[in-house]
Length: 159
Image 1 (cartoon, rainbow, N blue to C red):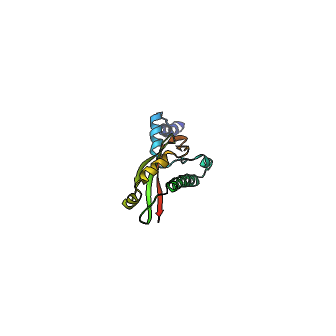
Image 2 (image 1 turned 135 degrees about the horizontal axis):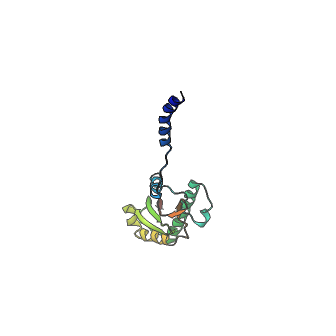
Image 3 (image 1 turned 90 degrees about the horizontal axis):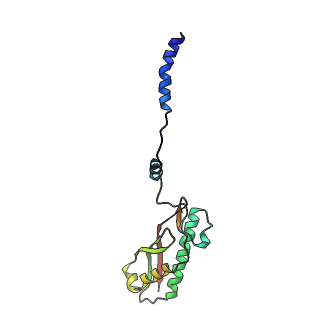
């Protein structure tokens, strides 16, 4: 009786042992698996000026950075005191790139031709504004500085 019971259980022991076999996983496989699930379009921490660095909530930090950049641009553009011949009420879009070292640069601009006709120096003024921005701490992803690009609306109103 014991021999029959042992013979019946023996195949199950071999099958269940095979299920628990382990295999060594290479670091390349782990990296590949992790980067597949990694969302490269989201950052853990947005770029920040000194006064925005301690904001931990992601949306509030993003808003702080965007507001500071907008305030800085508007103050620089107002200082130019441009004169226009026609009333303007338009929005241009500035694609602002922040490098992994925190260096700002204009990636591209979307500006209506009417704005360019009335304010021919606007591209130069925006470039100068970006070049003179205060220190920016770069965005991070898992603690690693990364480059980011933001689409910044700039409202132009002149009468």
